[in-house]
Amino acid sequence: MEPSTSTHAHHPPQSFLSKYVFSSDHKVVGIQYTLTGLAMAAVGGFLAYVFRYNLAYPGSPIPLFGELSAQQYNEFVTCHGLIMVLWVAMPVIISGLGNLLIPIQIGTDDMAFPTLNMMSYWVFLLSCIILLASFFVPGGSAAGGWTMYPPLSANAYHNTNPDFWTALFSGNSLVIIALALEFVSMLMGGINFIVTTINKRAPGMTPMRVPVVVWMLNIASVMFMFAVGPVFAGAVLLLLDNVIGTGFYDPARGGDPILFEHLFWFFGHPEVYVLLLPSLGVIAEIISVFSRKPIFAYKTIIYLSLVSAVLSVMVWAHHQFVSGIDPRMATFFSVGTIIISIPFAGIFLSYMATLWGGSIRFTVPMLWAIGFIGVFLIGGLTGLFLGSNTFDIYVHGTYFVIAHFHYTLFPIVFLGFFAAFYFWFPKFTGKTLNVTLGKLHFWLTFFSFNGTFFVLFFNGLAGQHRRINDYTLFPSIMQEPYITFQKVATISAIILILSQFIFLFNFIYSLIKGKKAVNNPWNSSTLEWQTDSPPPHGNFHTYPVVYHGAYDYSMPEMKEVDFVPQNLPLEKKTI
Image 1 (cartoon, rainbow, N blue to C red):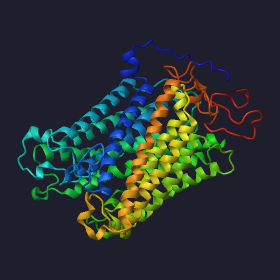
Image 2: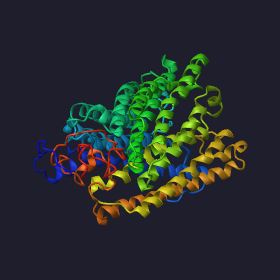
Image 3: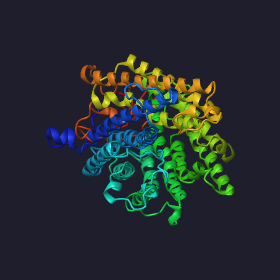
Image 4: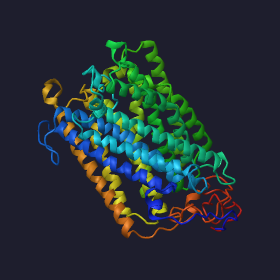
């Protein structure tokens, strides 16, 4: 490939601490976010194992844990949900992926604000420490459900004159403080993503030459910045209720607990799309490369994503159909929920058209990408049912909602992450992963996930409600086949968790003894594949110039090759 004649990318030498610990290099920061998120996933996964074992075998000692009290059950359910959504999904799908990909895919050396980028990670790490510390304070961690609804999350309801320091260091308060710090960290990162993409693109990198995943990360960052304000304010008010005994959510003092529901879900529902869009970007990159075709309707995908971003902040109250909402307003949010499925249907149809007629290669990243599409479609279709306010009243708070939620979030967070991991691992480590172990990891994860949650749709339709730690206390809902379904879900969940040790082994073994990766193992055209593996500090030896779009595969004018890198003019065919 002919090198660019642009300015040489030179950076001063670094010490060990500045290179690997207190680093401002976007790649190191991205790796730090990813590894920390995976560590938190291990915590959240263990919590899920404990309470899911308890659901299948209530009252039995839990291997590796022991007896689980009702209070601990509530704590573990609460913190599992919070950890997986905010301390795993956000750092892995947004911060980790964005830091790794945005600068190198747009052809620059680093983020616009490298020091701010480093600070964002350390604020996030502090939030992780505070959250984990909440398990070890008197009274235990938060136990009011992952949505943190008052009065369950408000200490002041139970003690109208709480001792300040006792209340400040309670589990509820520590979790709220951790949430606030995590939001601050994500805001710092989001500002960096947006400014970097706008101001630091390589020459010739017009907006419609930017890879889809970079577009998606930036749209998600803008959505997060617009939606996080209300929930941040709501968390501050909840902290004040806890610590100094205010009554913002206490009806006895003129407050309103429903206010918190609105503040939470005004953020909580767009948050799903904040996480979804980057994963959709990852899938776009992968299916284009491994079907050897340009992304079908690239511009349409971008426009539909922008439309979905606007609609996402208009449907939050479909989570509150049983909260006393006016039926006329419920109809508005019900219709809005159904309408928001249209842009995503368009995106998925574009992906299907990209695959249609392509020279598909079933590599490990491609398996995860196709698995994502199949699993997420189930989550999306069941979401249409829940968007109906009449149907939602029947299944609200049941295992139907749990199954839908996991069919939505699991592919976004885990299938999307693993697709990205197996795709970009050779680039950022310079090593190759074991293909057989990668495929084994995929198939075990895919089948065990479906075994865990598909059967719970039936439990939900039968009326089995969540947040009950011992179903033997309710004989009317403890009958076959729903007892068996709970056991099937638990056994499958254990297999799902154990399957991740294959990934862990493959990851560590490949880092130590994996074969050296070539610079562009997938014959991809985007800029990150046109530099060394792993990329040097500064990413490029010479800054690239971009001549065309990101997905020029199998174009009619290509005579000798089926792809052309973005930094090579189309008329030059020697790669």
